Length: 109
Image 1 (spheres, rainbow, N blue to C red):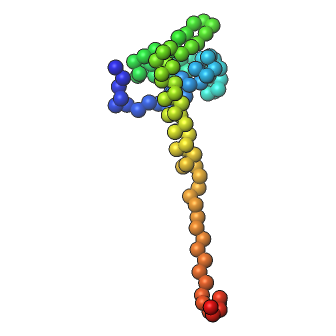
Image 2 (image 1 turned 120 degrees about the vertical axis):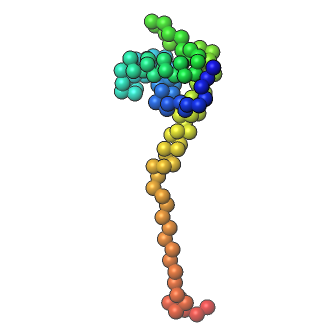
Image 3 (image 1 turned 90 degrees about the horizontal axis):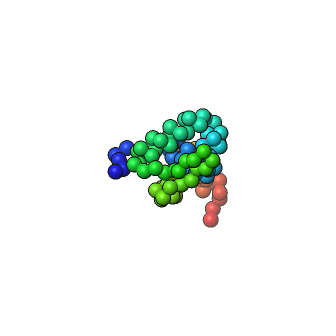
């Protein structure tokens, strides 16, 4: 059963998506500039958190399980929302310039 009281870790979800995209723990680790062992641990924790095995691993292949296929789209949506939220916060707040002019300067109607 899934524990919904704790939020998912963004870095862990990103690791899962990269493993699935590259079909490789090694390439995902390289993309995240970390070790393969760290990526494996992240995936293990995510699978334990969700209560499902997300990837089938063999010495030569990595592929999504049925629960992995079901979770991957939600994972991508979560990462996109996270990127949008960070993007919204990185833009400087807009500034307004208000110019007023006196009737004396502008002249009569």
